[in-house]
Length: 207
Image (cartoon, one colour):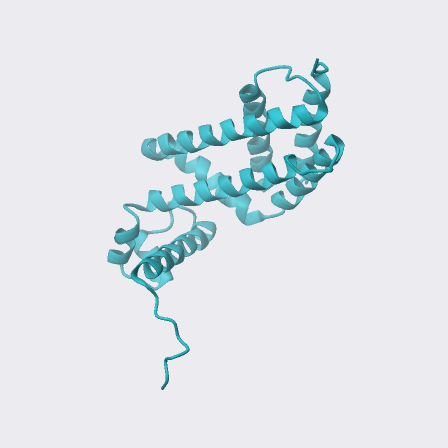
């Protein structure tokens, strides 16, 4: 059989492929069984590899969970930055886009489940809690920069330090996310956007 049409993966490409398959396998199992209900061996088997292959890419099961957390937050930050910095849009149009994006985001039940898994494991594991706090702090700092830019689009001054405001928005979002997981009301996007609008209108006009 001819293999001329099949590209042979380089060592680096093979390593990347293995890593990605392990991450996807772990993600699927965490969604179904939860983090504590999934073993390292099950992740390796689901991805089609040995436990040795797992340890060649990750030092622990927690490391995979941290990778999922980091990726999820990075995607959200990048998407929000695109909206906030969009040219040719009024500030009100930007807020409307943020609300529409949030509405689509919270429809993703997998996202809600993983978000809760992150928080639960941070409560149970001191080592993961430290990593979780570090990633979350970086997320908060990026959010503070984006909120400052949003206020600038409105021509308003921040009524409080941006990191405090973003911390409040994040706490509200997480609390609503947990609430929505058991009592769906589909109000996260509307509530969060309403809070942001109120904070913006509370700001003084920039000189």
